[in-house]
Length: 316
Image (cartoon, rainbow, N blue to C red; front, side):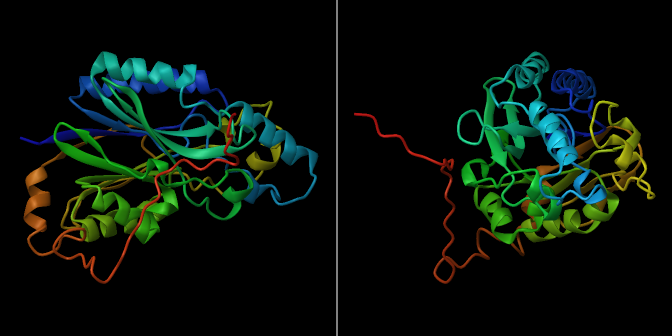
């Protein structure tokens, strides 16, 4: 019998429609519960869409009206962590007793209200939103769309006695980010990706081997034609001569690094994984990166978990 059953939602958003995407997520939470899952994870910025256009439309063009228009649409579709769209998913989690890691385009409520963040919103069925991790460093052209995150969300969450952590896309390659989660007691690691087998196949197994954790990846399946007609750069994106690389890639690796479920291409739906915590304990005999294999006398690691703000207001 497994200690934990996890559902990975390999699917697509309702582009730039956060409420409809949240309702889709809520339905998938119900499906996950019906399948016996205690945890569900959604792709990177599932609510409500990954910014795939800059690299395909000359996104670095300065003072370009179409690029500005595209960002305006994207900003309007971003959600607040305490907003009504997230509440829809939280209600489903409470109703079905499922913990969720939701990839979302988040908008700052005060500082950075005009900035989008690539965030992971952690939702507990009993306590609602319990954490928001903002991607530490957007990758390449993503930096024109997302702001830099901070360490406030670098933490794990307990579900049924199992500690689970999550990171977005290429920050899974950041050794210090991974170390922060290992040191916080991580047993299960979930990587959220926009979707690509080429991205998930190596790092998922590497994390399983390095952290001696269950390592899971969840990726989206994104079709250029899914962009709505009102999106200013839709025609340019759809005319891109190459097929969409966002083909899923959801997968599961055991703590020793072996595949339990190899990266899945193209399929849309829930991938279920049964995780045995004893496998983590067995593999830690030879290597425990934040335990007997750590050298705190040699290496000092400090993680600043304060939420960063542009200003500190001191009232009289």
